[in-house]
Length: 118
Length: 117
Image 1 (cartoon, each protein chain N blue to C red):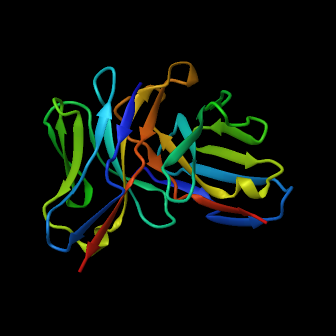
Image 2: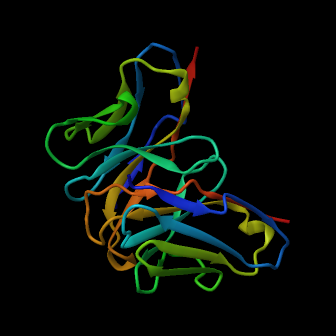
């Protein structure tokens, strides 16, 4: 159980285009979803936390207008990288957790999306 | 401030030998601690968690971790390593983000485990 599906797994596109990444919880309702960015040989950097039906909360230094997050349902959150540039190339990972304030539940992760901007 | 430290970038162990991946933490209240594993080009997989209760926590794939309050450590262990255990391991602590949106998880920098046949 607790499967999180992330799509696409890999995307290559030209500079200036926008890219949408989907994150779905397949067998549970994810009140809270997280978006991370992982640089090579580094740990995960939390970009934003989103709760279903409300605006995402972005971490300091993350551009809200650049990384648009939508969490319209309990099973789907999307991250759109707008007007992507080569410096946005990275591995993006989503995570979902059952419950908004359930402290002791682990986060379940998608397999990540490798984004390459040419 | 809450933090997680994984002092070793890399751990090498021979197959069949016991392995330990170290983690220390700093929290203001009761710690909620987690271990995750990441295989190449994949997301993270949950291994185990400590919330309360027994200090020795058993998790997936034969892994276990021992919570040591006095040493503020939560080292990951396995009695007999397998080559397939080779991966990147992350320790994490649940932190209250305050104005940034409730509870969130802080990850250590990761430790790469190499198990040689």
